[in-house]
Length: 306
Image (cartoon, rainbow, N blue to C red; front, side, top):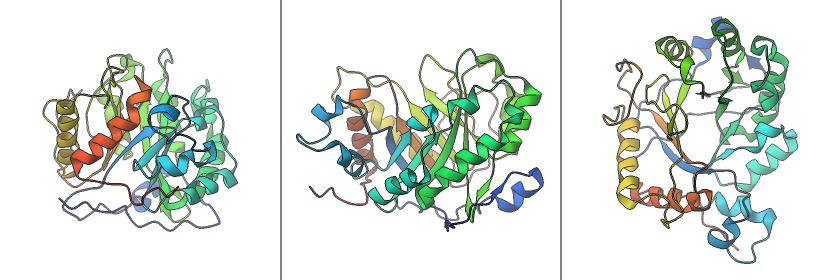
């Protein structure tokens, strides 16, 4: 099966962030017209000591770990941005170390997500997005994660969503809402995300809300059930099931075996799909991602050259 490529993006040296609600429809990227959206499969981060025993080649210097990882999976979700934003030059370095077609997702900084007044975080949001835009056409969805125990107020949350820019320079942005307060997740929450074209996270986890309602023109799944006792993290049959779900999402359909909050209202059209193996038995996540790519018949864009 052929996969559509990433939508055309043209990063500019001067960053302009658009966040006005009146500009959202005009700035949103045109939906793909290919038979299927693009499927990317990745891991969370690339610096993890146990991976030096079972993923990275023996003797590989740490400064080349991103180079290696980006040639064995097709995406990485950056977790470090949650604890502190990086300098634009660092993002540019990561961009240049990875092959064409590679994608970085990134978690928004904790200093924003933990704010008591989300509606007043505009300057911090602009600072974060303006810096990470240096990833250029390798910048994937931005993940706005609200941890368990964080009680959200509907009005403040809605104002916050309106602050999230839909554009950085000439490039459209994608936003993912990862709300872990189960009491906040209802039809109103989904409608708010859907109106803004923002995705919600599907978490394959018993610890966090897990629902597969479609609210955007792309799907974002964080798969969190890898097991240490299985070399590929998930049994092969389970990975095959995820491959089939990914293809169904990409083709515009929806898996029938995943839970939802409300009956489906999503338009049947091609969608890009982002699947990440995150947390759980973290030492197995690269193997799980590589096996899923194999089952999908996909391979990273370039080989790693020692």
